[in-house]
Image (spheres, rainbow, N blue to C red):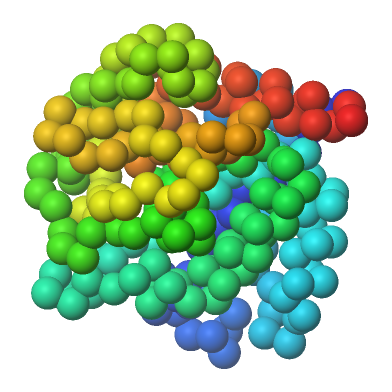
Length: 242
């Protein structure tokens, strides 16, 4: 049986300004689920809990049924003025609170964890790291996601190097916020040409990685991007067999 891989999503009430009275939509970019599926996993969108749910109980029930979790991107700071750059919590408060609980529960259970873009930044914040207070330039490409934007330099002998099979790869770029401080228990393992930290790994966990770029969008054109999902699903299969 294929491993069950949960993918976090956004709520249109928080991101698109939809009326809460009409419910809104839970959604995630199709590239995430497609990449997981192509690598042999069974993807599921994880919905946000309703307001009256007991968050901890809801989280434990969900995580107990999964073999891995992908913390997705989406819903960035587009609706805010540049001079008032919000925190991840301020951007999507319900999503942040829920994903924090998901992340801590998955960490406790040693589930394979992959954070992409906003999901990467969640890893940083939840475990005590810090994002830069000001926006950065040059990392918001105007090309399709399958097109590369800059090179990624990868730390020698890191787990991430073993994961992607190279010391350098081409990646896309769709962010205006960057990581300033890596949390304790993690190390930086990938950098852009201008020194922005673009990948981290947990030191004492077998598979907990965060990447600022979007490998799911380059899955079909870059074997190194594909390898991230292949290994992610492989670890989910191993977890399922425990």
